[in-house]
Length: 107
Image 1 (cartoon, rainbow, N blue to C red):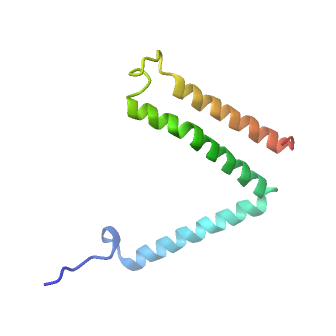
Image 2 (image 1 turned 90 degrees about the vertical axis):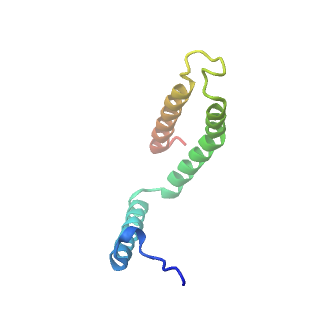
């Protein structure tokens, strides 16, 4: 009368799934520890990455969502529609300059 539920994901043997998941987690932790020990001032690097991502998410994401909801820049009457591309290029350039300054010790 009850329904049987297959607990193995996508038909994979449970031991194989557990072993691969454990190996992946161990590799990710080992990689993070290696990077943390090899990069001097790792805390500053992570703070910079966190601040850059939070700024880009809080500024660019609402604009991108608005454009998506309104049908894009062409529907709003803007010519060209290259604003998103320009913003991405400018953001990448700003990131490269900040990383360069951080590595030089100017920040």
